[in-house]
Image (cartoon, rainbow, N blue to C red; front, side, top):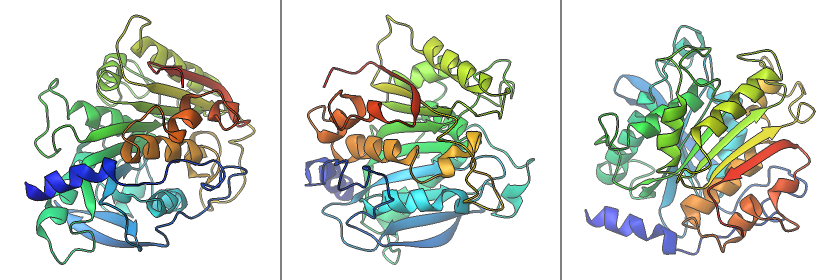
Length: 339
């Protein structure tokens, strides 16, 4: 209990605020943060492997945790550049597999209820608190957790977040109370019940409504995402799901929908043998990742302070406000004060 109490002090530490220049956003160049280069190891947990990426340099306080769930047929190599960038700014990332790196390439290996995100949190709880031989022992702030994912994993970020609430049989005992600071869902597909994919393999508007009623949320997609309907209809349906989940008279935390242009998310051949266009735009290093880095720094480092530069970039209208990003085609921010 003493360790948890100490970790809760992370928000009071002197984590650097966001900066469009020093974070490498003008133009975006994947600038490594002050706690890189990063290190990693693979561990087994509950019969499945997971990859842990952590800073090589000492951080001013235990680092917030990001659990990132991959998409169907996914592999850490698709996301690794971005995950390592986030870690270099003072985070620890856990990347769980369902069965194994090779078996998860099989499209029949799926999960959409967030179980492996929750197992990632459970692994961190156990390792950080009790395994003194672990490289991350005592170095993770278990009171500050970001749940995130892409595609199938983005559905998991929504459904897994549900399982931390008092609704739907929660809160899950593996998740420390009040520890979830942000939910990031990148290209989660079409909301149910009809899908595709159909419920219960997808999420419902009511699910997202419960999530945003409890946590700040960042939702991203691309105009040329054709994974569920021919482009641009996947993005249109996702925006409809987003708006339907957040009625005008609702009460919810700051929630942002960002749709990136087809030009920004066009194929560039940078991730062979995989493509990185449309639905796979999260693989790219300079399109969606600056938004994710700003959001995780705002809520996990700056405690959600609306006076921070992170908030001014994410929600403001000034010179460095990300709403001016030329890669963005549609931007909808709800439930946030003017900053």
